Amino acid sequence: LICYIRGYTMSDQISKREIIGAILRLSLLAAISYFSAKFLIKRLDPTRDHKKDAKKRAAEQFRRLGIKDVD
Image 1: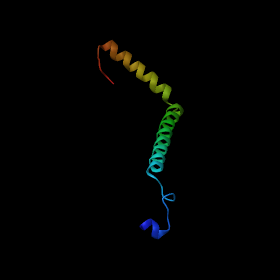
Image 2: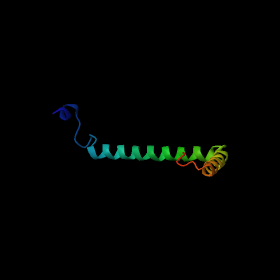
Image 3: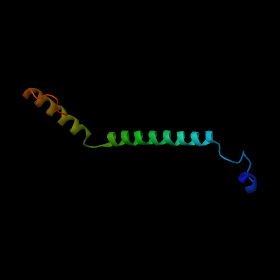
Image 4: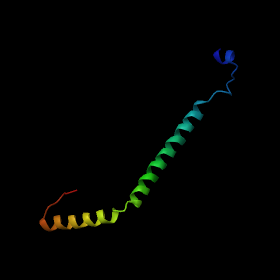
């Protein structure tokens, strides 16, 4: 009745399928954007190599000392 009063037809309204599709597309776009930004930030970090080397040296020193399960 409300649709008739306002002059809308069923074809003018957004269907549940269209809403679900839009939500899925938005979710997919957000996920792709998040992981792309995370990847780019990681790759563009100027101290990345230094951190990796320091982590390797620390792991080697802990191994020599006999200390396990250090993260």
